[in-house]
Amino acid sequence: MATITAHDAPTIPQRPLPTKVRPQVVSTRDHVPRTKQEPARKLGSRYAKAIANDTTARFTQPTAPRQPRKPFKLFSAQTLVHYSLHFAFPAVLALVFFPLMWQTAYLIMLATMLIDLDHLLAKPIFEPRRCSIGYHPLHSFYAVPVYALLLLLPATQIVAVGILFHLFTDTVDCLWSFSHCHECYLNSRIYALRNWLRKLLGREARE
Picture 1 (cartoon, rainbow, N blue to C red):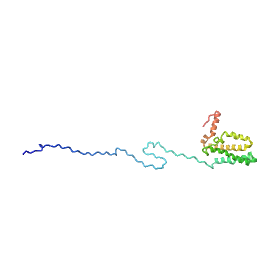
Picture 2 (picture 1 turned 60 degrees about the vertical axis):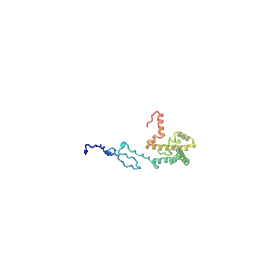
Picture 3 (picture 1 turned 90 degrees about the horizontal axis):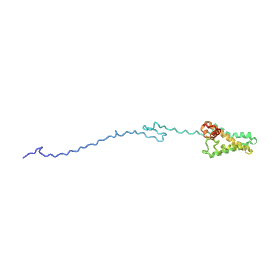
Picture 4 (picture 1 turned 90 degrees about the vertical axis):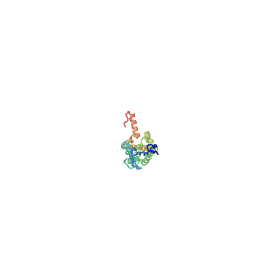
């Protein structure tokens, strides 16, 4: 009986076994840039603080708040002089110009304060830095010649003296304000009248 050796036996080709390849895990640490977390800003902070990566931080400066306007001083020297001329000095005028009826003349001069009712037409009604001469209708430059003509009539002389002195008092108050508020002078009708007169005389108005 013949024996079959290993070389004579048919060989069956073996299929290669598949090898499992584990996918390579790429770490995201080397590819994703780190972002530095900034602490949350406090609510109610007055000015925003620039972060470290803000390119405009070196150019941005916080704006300073506006300073409030200086309040009107009720008992300043200017106010005391102004209202003393309005209410006290007319008594002196009454004694000088109308000695026989100075008390009646004084009351009539006080009544001429009613021309200040034209302040109600202005907005705002009360503005301490505003010059009333030339601004309000009854304080306008056109009304002054009319008040001067009232001096020619005996029946209206007391009223004319009271109104003209009232305008003189307001003019003094305006000049006092101009001495410490140049902006008040530039915005006044007196400054506009001054420029008009200089142009009328052939002179250039200077600031």
